[in-house]
Image (cartoon, rainbow, N blue to C red; front, top):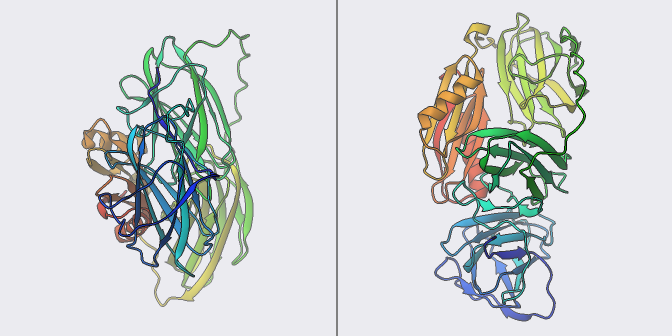
Length: 503
């Protein structure tokens, strides 16, 4: 039987009672109490340290919440907390957005809302909030119940029923579900209408071992997979990333029974052997549009496809390279003509795009355009340009293929345990050893690095939420991770960093 829950829905509600914000309401203890069908009109001062807190008692099993603003020149941040003052959801309202609709389950009791804002360019931040549906008898079923961000708090779901959930615009939001599997296979269905988000779905067995992983890139809206798994409790974890404007709404359903028998499928036709990688040419300041697909494999990203281009440089100069795509998470690498890796990058170009800026001697080089995740395809854009000349620009010493290293960071956001590993000969060894060193059952790999790549883990010391950033040096990775963390969280610090080659 499903537990009782509360539903958050950002809807415009009519026939409400108006009230004004009462300062000070800048903390949990000073939170302004609001009541059923109240609308509160409030203002966020042009000050990054101004927070507005509200609290309300949920006595029924449904709750509606409306957030509205006419301010187009600032970003708003709305955080939802449960009775234990634990953050359960977080929403970012970008400049120009007037409001949004969210459905969210949360355990009964006192609930809190915190409103803050930043990136002001005009007036102070006027807004209104409305609560309704706090009374008994207003029940909406089959919604996720927050908090459900771990194996121990996983929502129990039942066969053949769609459950509705939301992923916050926050890398550290996870939704866990569990169910009992009575057979040797399950059918998993996942649907979303959010085209501007990557969704990640993990499946675990009763011992919390990962069995399956699915990545729905932006624009991929449906998943319907049947696969084998041992009987017993099965867990499904949903997370998301690479948001542009959405709030991560989805539906999920499971059926832990064998599918109807089907006719045997004929033996697959063997795939043709991989073709030799062709090398194209790209001119200075000429944006190259191309399609990433099979035929040539990446030298640094296992299982990923690649396209190679030659660039010719006639003087010692700073070189800028940019690789971007709306279809996949890019990975950019630079080699000398002997095939030795000079530099690589994952996400320095913003979002999931890649970027390199490096001094090079006159000569010829190979640029590899690839994807971070295996088997991804799609359109990409590659640009290279020459910047100011340099007097001396020795090419960094490149490791030979036998000294190309891998590393990883593992982190458990609930215990705070972390571990790093570096100078491994393959990615699998780096991940397995790092997880073993981390030692906690909740540890998971949060960053992979290879070649000359470095990564840093920035953590909010209050909530355990984290952000990851990459760079070509530890300092670059740490500065980026701390900057991203401080955008979304309040108490950030660098917990650890790692470079694949052990620098």
